[in-house]
Image 1: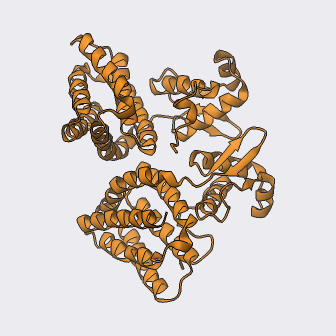
Image 2: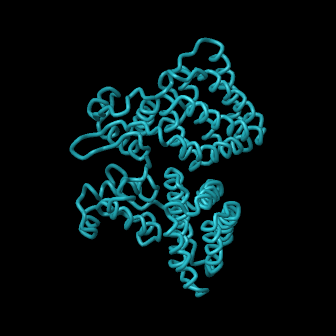
Image 3: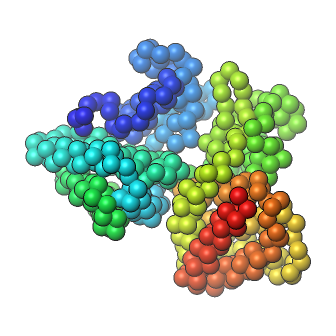
Length: 223
Length: 221
């Protein structure tokens, strides 16, 4: 599956309507397609997505937990502002958890998932070869992280890392136009995916750590 | 900007916050048994709380995996997933020592007074046996103070979620576990390491503590 398919940022199983609405909205909020501070109207979204208001409302409830939307009684629901000051705290957590996920994925991923990673690595290679838009690179980045978290085989680790990654991605999206090295950053994933797929756990952990610290360094230099 | 609600820091807790804390406590310690339905009307009366702040509290509890709401059936305490123990422990084994080290580096940071108070109270308590609930409450209080001392609100929120779930698992199997005496000594050592700024020691103690916790539970499963 191409990394540039608009709604495919990851390969989670379909689930209920509320689940689908949640994932779509989560991703739109993460890449700032819905701008920070924008008002969110459940009726409007329901029409747009062709589903009822109830699943949309359920989805919005979950998104509040993820700090992607905020609800004020009587005023409405809004996409949260991007918290740039969270970069430091979020990075500290990711520095400790991303290597764990990469190591576990390298050790425990089933063959089908390793194959998925190799395919994704190849697609990324092709992507960087062309002239990818920042948007397509961002989607690729999300896709890679989520595949790795899922491959770790630890649902709690996956959930925590996804939340952190979404927060970090939002910060990144805010300043995307100022980042000269997006392509290189996303290309790093090729080595990481290959190491995990090949079962090289320590190398995977090191690459994952480098990736997070590199990201933070880049962010600091432009924020 | 911290992700902790402002009310948890400078302003007095809101009605919803207080309801959240109370319900969270009852869920962790199994006063509301796993799987039990939560009746909004009754809780609203019991906690003397309007439906809106109550629903806010329930939403937060759901994100903490302590309750689950089904659209037509209502809200229930989640069942305790003991098989999640290993997953939760894996995360805690990384994050708890991190929190302890950070807390020590800051010598308790904003939570220093709180940590000193806990240390004093622990010293005064001596080596008396603690019943299960007391020991677990001590444990939770101390961990929470360490998380607060680490100075990373995302770390704190994440660790609070997992220590709550871990404590709840403990409560489910606690009748089969002998006294939690050894935890008292560990806590004293941990607090001392944090307050004196010995980050390496704090991290080491915390890691051993979390592993020991998991081992004790596994032995009685």
